[in-house]
Image 1 (cartoon, rainbow, N blue to C red):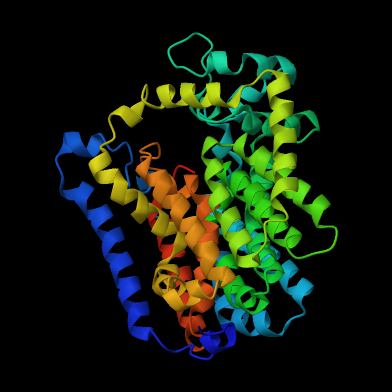
Image 2: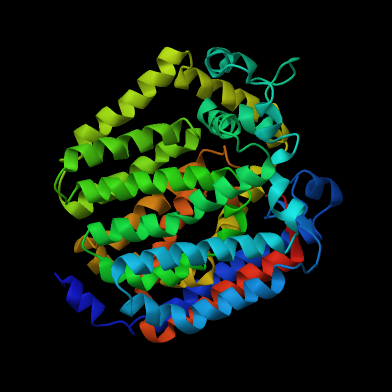
Length: 447
């Protein structure tokens, strides 16, 4: 069985596979964009996505964020790989987070302050629309399930009804501490969402793969997923669950592991009260246990998760009731018309838009049997996230908009870029940045 060092000693092997992976991904994305353009008008309208497979509208444009975004991309391409290999670990993590924040914010500013950032979460379908009506959080929790189904006088708006009450509670609490409005909400999404780059690196470092974390950090900081980090609550879901996985990884190897594991469990628990789909983050968590070759953090983490679940249950919200009602609500809306025959594969194309072609190029390296047999931590986390995506897709409960809905899974798949040859890192970073900039300037995304 090859060791990690032996696997790392062959960085240039598989170049053909890299290009094949990127080409297949590019073909899938192209097909997903072309098919709606050549289909009949009724079928195209049934997609409910003007720029399918992405949720938005075709609108070539530039904004004041254009030049700064290009400058950030150029800086990461030119200096990112070198700094990732030479900076002290903690300083590198701080720099990666600041870079991710700047990248996501400048991309959002291509659409302007209101349209690209401060106004996104104030839409009539969004969380902030309901914040003013919540005068008592405990009353809201007790009556939450009764307002999930549509066509009632007091039905929740689309996004509030589609998630457990943790998501609405988060924005209500922001408002209560004086951080109300779209600007503060957008900033919270931006800071929490972009911290996923650091969380992934921390998890890999804790599992003994700091070299892989360093290699992946420029790609994590410059991820095309940043297009949706500054403008959707799913960025918060991604951040909370990413740190849950990171702390779980730390707990598997460190002193004081029980306290850290409980904290990880509480974040996992809160995650499933932010989004029902976050139960699938159990799959990356299992990958952590396999990579660490231990189950010691499992029981303390379960305890932490149960504490959160108990708190919401005592407050009046039963998660399973909410889930079953959400499935009904899902098919009361446009999901009943969106054709699964298109979206089951177009979902993957939309997610590839968030991952970038470099990630697709690296997947065959992450999925290689020698790495999986050696229990390579990075490869296992990538596999765990991919399994979560496959299950989510098969559920048929995510037809469209997966470029944001699957952000919590996508950021772990991005770790596959750690396996790309160091000599080609700048070229692949250029591809990543180019894809993100192209989407930002040709599609007016809804998130």
